[in-house]
Amino acid sequence: MAITIHWIRDNAELAQQCQAWRQQPFVALDTEFMRVDTFYPIAGLLQASTGEGAWLIDPLCIDDWTPLAALLDDRGVTKVLHACSEDLEVFQRLLGCQPRPLFDTQLAAAYLNLGFSMGYSRLVQAVLGLELPKGETRSDWLQRPLSETQVSYAAEDVQHLAELYQALLPRLSAEKHAWLLEDGAELVDSLGRDSDPQQAWREVKLAWKLSRQQLAVLRALCAWRETQARLRDQPRNRILREGTLWHLARLQPQDRVSLARIEDMHPRTVRQDGETLLRLIAEAASLPPEQWPQPLDEPLPLEASGLLKKLRSVGQQEAEQLDMAPELMLRKKVLEALLKSGFPHGPYHLPDSLKGWRRERMGAALLARITALTTPGASA
Image (cartoon, rainbow, N blue to C red):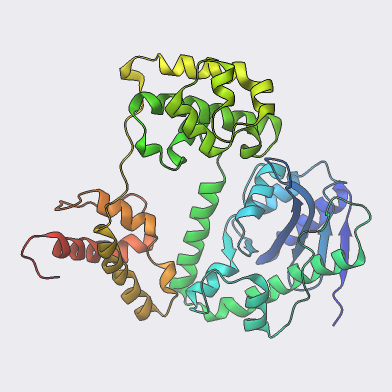
């Protein structure tokens, strides 16, 4: 059956339709964007559906996004998306807000034990029995006019997303539905705020190997890279590669010749930003010890990998009881944080990252399990 397609190409049409959507219990949303050589995604098309046709919003024609922002913030309308982390970035950049409440159909599939991290086409096939054509994801969504194939692809995607929601929702218990919305809220909260450039150094691989003085240099360089990526609207690695940051912090070159010899250092970077980098390194390296960052925890030793596997069984048992995808239960980072809180012999503490229903249902069992596993002479 052909999908009815409605275009929204001016502010008045957007305001009128957003008001209509706010009278509905849900609206499915999707985005198409370009992000080849920019830090921020550039919106090429926004799609919406309540199950009766598809609305295509042309962001190149709209300059007042207030009505759509109000819709996204309307707690009475469920916003339906699929694997939506990049869509959320588009909304944050374009509208400065996030969809609440958020129902992610990829998460819903995991809650129903249909599969974890399922791709959209596969989920549509499994639930709706429809074979989707190969996508236009990599095509140019900023070109005008869009091709017929692009328009059809975008409309079908959002129409079937609404149908997915209508098919999945009745299969979820009230409890699982509440948990899914809880996960959606956590995702929105984590992506809805800009990360602090001063904390970017914590994410650098092998940063734990550096001394506190070297970490001070790494902190300054990472903050500069993060800030410049946003100001220049360029990918972080276009400014400076992560591995290069680590080598700069460790070796701390003092002149342009030494700077140019750093691994993966691009000659363009030396020409354009060399003096700035040398100044940042010198300033951070000369900070007094009381201003150095605290050292990062070392990775868990190899013998802890067996403990991780045994702890994961707590989540697997809970998943079996709830008929949910096991991967949905306990994230590896949560289990690692639990182990690091008291390894090797305790006492252990539940990490703050274990929250909500997972903490309520599995927190006590995790503490009991890890205590039994790590107490000398105790039986696991």
